[in-house]
Length: 361
Image (cartoon, rainbow, N blue to C red; front, top):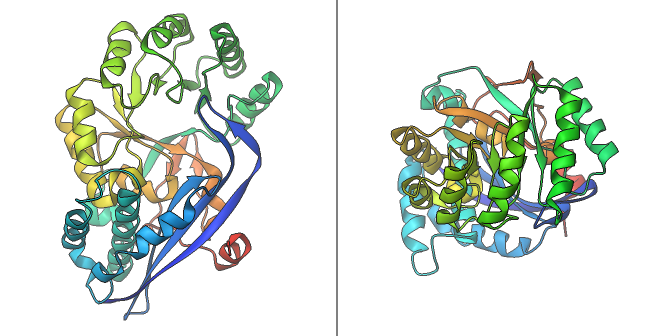
């Protein structure tokens, strides 16, 4: 099997309404879709994204700059391709858009491997489960009103979720406390609830708020401080009885090792496009296991299920519906669990009509 062509398509998926976190205002998610065509008539697919389609052209150009490492190559030599790209980006850095590009190409290679073998990737990696716990993350934003928080929480339960996340990070911490209290009262104690500060606090602010949040029996407190403040993460973790989750903003096994060595979190949250693709994600899951730290995948729900189904220390996946319109297939939730697809490769394929609809000039 040989890759004959690397093709990219930029798309922009508008949200129903603008949403906000402590540090983001999001109106749409722009994606670069990646297609690796082969002489066997099969195509490997993946994508990267950015809020509001900002700098999407840069993403596209970076991905295409590595075509010489893909075209004419056998995707089954995916680790060799990964290493060649890793070496080439050394002068410009192993964080940021370079890793986004590497991640997309690596993931598309793995999709090809699964499709060519006619096997789902979690079977190739070594499966450990057929379902995985998920939590609803596509709502309860900082911009949501109290009525919207209640409605969204109830809707999540109706959809089959038994776990959900609310954002915090208001200037007045009492506002955060009241919003969390109302959601907890709405869903009861049997539904798992976590909070996400999106890096919105200083360590002292996070500790003050976290101590008041402890009474709400939270599953975790996510990114309480700036992602690069590992010492601050560790301080918050030591001060609170709530588990700390973080890692979505770090890059590759080296960034994850730094977090683990700093004892910065109780749950590690690798992000597929920042981690370096499925090849690196597998290494990171094993690294975290050596530290006896669980992982929970960040966004990229469809494309991360193969990791969740083959990594025993993966405790959950984040359910983000932003990208579902891109795919022919849909995710299936039952009793708070996501079904792992038994389809070849990643198990999700881009819908041509949707791509045409959202395509950018």
